[in-house]
Amino acid sequence: MKVKQLEIFLEKKSNRLADVSRTLAENAINIRALSLADTADSGILRLVVNDTTKAQQVLTENGFSVGLTEVLAVEVPDKPGALDCILQMAAKGGRNVEYMYAFSKKSGESGMLLFRFDDQDAAEAVFKKAGCRLLSDDEVHSL
Image (cartoon, rainbow, N blue to C red):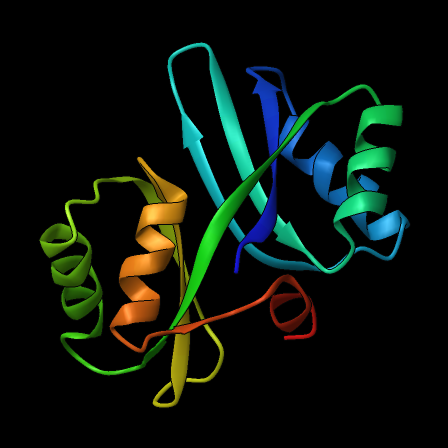
């Protein structure tokens, strides 16, 4: 199961991130998880939202460069070593993490790790074989 993620290119201009958040808020789009990476000249905002199609449409209409990619969402217990367990499985399966970010639903319960691997399908197979709970698009959107 893969989750759709928006990738928004942000020029290094004042308030670009605030422009994204305003656009989403004005259109009643809720952010479920996010990651922001920057370079000297630009940034990449990665978002998982409750309505990917609508978000992509309104952001594009407002002049943002928006891409759509897929990530794996792995549910993990909120306890020490949970991330290491997942990363060790990926390593043993020969998978390399391109990037990841996390979201915690409620402290002490469970969290969600969002991954982009060098081979998404192979990573998905590794986690399924190990009995990991992979979250669907619908499950992530309803958090």
